Amino acid sequence: MDMPAETATQVVIVGGGPVGLGLAIDLGQRGVSCVLVERYISPQPIPKGQNLTQRTLEHFYFWGAEAELRAARTIPPNYGIGGMTSYGTLLSGYRYDWLQRELVRPYYFTDNERLPQYATEAVLRQRLSQLQNVETVYGWSASGITQDAGGAQVTIAERNTDRQLVRHASSDRSHQPLGRLAGGVDLADDHAELYVGILRRLGDQPGVRDALQAGRGPRRVRGEDRGADHERRQQHSHRPVELRL
Image (cartoon, rainbow, N blue to C red):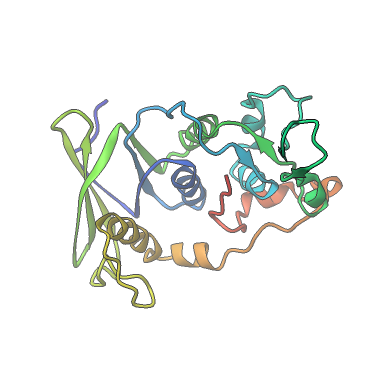
């Protein structure tokens, strides 16, 4: 695939798991241009998180991907998706029902779901492909990050080749150290510095900080009120990223 050697954007996200994908969708729907860099070309079919709470499905609803997520479910619709810990045998009188999501169902306007993380990522990738202001770069990894007065520069490298590209994230606070969190906490780990540095560039964008910090969770409504609440999808006034897998 032909990609420009250098481009400018508002946000560079390194890592295309559920959180990175969800963040890119959330920003894209808010009109924030961003680049998502993920080292794997396709989701990896290995066991990971699979239980999606009602709160997580509320995010999928506002991201416009709830129906697609439920359609990707690998367990038949009439099968249970709860869980139980049993001691001794399944016939033992000693057990613990650890996923009683139905007890809190009245506080949400959508049901929980269960499917493998790679299936969840596939749905998120498909939704992300519909957003024109988000560039996705699959099969690439971040190899370096630098900053200057104009912002941050992320160098990405294609896996198993020598190709490299550069993505610029502009910032109005680029003079602040990448390895320092708000509040003055120093991070010793290089990977943590890279991660926090990129997120700091995100938070410094005009309008992005307000969108991320001042956003409130979606109003908790009962199922019968869901139709009247549909217009809230366009407002995106929920908390942007709170995936619980």
